[in-house]
Image (cartoon, rainbow, N blue to C red):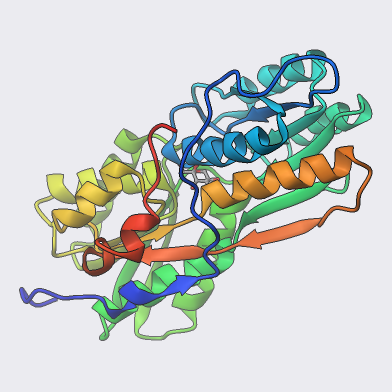
Length: 325
Ligand code: T6T
């Protein structure tokens, strides 16, 4: 790669972006008894701006109907920590449960138990192997997002080269789909060499280590695809530590404030921002439809926006996640 500043023309691409949400309610929106509907939201992990933005969408939509929302999430993206939370939420008998399962296998039984207990379950973001018990599944076009990440790296490196993927854990439906989309697109282009995927367990420090070690082995890596917010954060740190910022391109999924800083300082070249607020809004709508005995949409796909430095002032900036409602 030359020392020349490269710029990405994909900045203007927006794919199926849904409504952006503005205000969000407080934790005791709605009532709590009588005919008031109780909606529980169990996040994949607490403190993640992706789920915070989704929570804002959930609260905003629930507020319109007076439904009450309760939100909980594990301290790590880990089914052994999420399962007890789901079990206790189920015991508290909400009318509906919006949940982002942290593993396609381990979370299936606890969520089936929720449905058997009479709770309407809506899978938001991630899913499980057999989601037939759910009223609806709502997620981004994750395969398409992985393909778009490859396109962005290719645009920056038209001559091809070695590319690496940093993901979280196998068995997480969303990031696995992103890896698949990226891998297939890379392997279909003979000028690129796919170095495979490494797993950081959703820990930025681990992602940073993966990247510095990979660069020692293959100093000619031209691009890294980081499949979520924490993988992207750690990848950016790893590239900085290796003194390679601006020399190795990073395309990261998600768009929290830290990712935007890395974009602004030139460590990251593009972000694939999801529409978590829209996922939350649609989740509430599907849950309420199911509770009213109306038909639901079994599968809903939401779009993404490619954010670059060039469009941060416009539609890119609009797609940045919130860190509070
Ligand atoms: O990328 C999102 C989400 O879609 C994924 O399932 C898990 O990681 C995030 O929450 C970002 O941290």
